[in-house]
Image 1 (cartoon, one colour):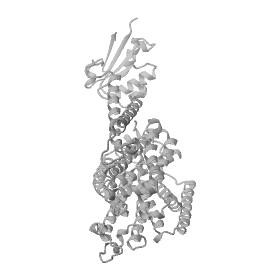
Image 2 (cartoon, one colour; image 1 turned 90 degrees about the vertical axis):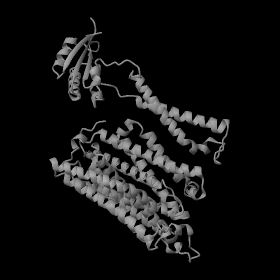
Image 3 (cartoon, helix red, strand yellow; image 1 turned 90 degrees about the horizontal axis):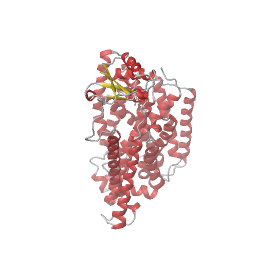
Image 4 (cartoon, chains in turn brown, blue; image 1 turned 180 degrees about the vertical axis):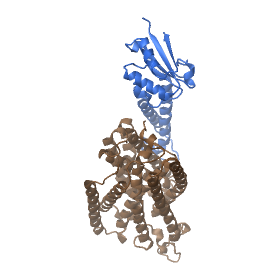
Length: 402
Length: 176
């Protein structure tokens, strides 16, 4: 059965984009930070958050292929729908990086050539200059294009295979399945490295002096939860509209379990990073958390509480994960929680004292991209049958029971 | 009249499942099923209640968290305040991050051990306990349905007759 993008959903997603764009424009007019840093940073935060949803989905999709998981075959089109936002998010990120490279803003202030020039007494920063073997523009662009190229190509290739598998049967189908299985494993190898380094390059380098080895996993776990939450909310929406008739509570239960489990992974990594830095108490390491604790305590502790305690308490029981309404509510809360996490990772470092908490700019861009994501995802869903027509594990997935 | 127990032996879990379904539909209460491994989906068929092991595990877990917290408060704060690496050592809440890893570990320890021991006691399968399966072949490659006359209004003959209609390998009756 194919999905039809209802008029109502279309106008809601459009309305979100328009309201978001208007709010963002008002925010831009009121932005008096140096170089419109605040505008750029809020664009980057939201670009990155929604990039994270698409990338986290892509990772999970490859993981399901590589582990030959059967139950998720039923919902694989939903993951493909979310993955389709990847190129758009990639373009947004590239725009932010281009603007930074040409000096339109100083979110990544190591990009400024004056910082690494020893003859420039006013701006020379020895610590950044020492890192310039890694943090220099040509190498940064090589890496960035490698990540984005790999992810965009991966998403495109997986989607293509999935659509072609719908037309295949018998041995050719199994052969194609084994091909995606092997390619997924290969993709995960690249993803493991890229997901870690991209968070150093794009986010950790905002606070250039600061470093943390756990940072990559922490950011990646945030991307992964956001993806799991988006997928389960989307599936529940589709089921309420009468699609996916073969989807059982067991599938929803499993998707809820992923939200629960990865919320813990995220909390574990966040705390591991925090506790080690807190315990060692080395001045150059504590700055990152110190800024956030001193200047944005509500944002920091609020998002930690939302992303850790809410899923722990509310999603622990089996009944909670099998109750669509409840799961949708908790999912929405966690979704916002992880958006706040993305905001607090980037903003204090990128905007500094001009950032006074979540405002029109952040919310405006958020609504804009949310509408964009919904529109793009639902458009992709209309293009292929919602349940795959042929897949070696389709039968097993239909009878999934836990 | 003496109570009787009927054992029907099967070679395949799927055949057993359809036999059990047939019995239950005919109004027979199946007392138990014996199998070398868990049979997927048998619980709702024979009306096994959902396990409460999860609730027990949660209780053991919080017990562990609370005990660890109490221990830390007593050892590290109240009885003998310890200053390790210049960390604040006079209040529990300021020192909390340092205690979290052990609290976490102790929670897992208590939940895991409590759950495993409860499981073994509840199933009467603690090491050294006598086996309760009616036929040693259920630990190898056979699957058995147990029906007792005390649970059912039908006599043993009617039940055996019904089991004959399934693909049972053999049907044994026993008095107890």
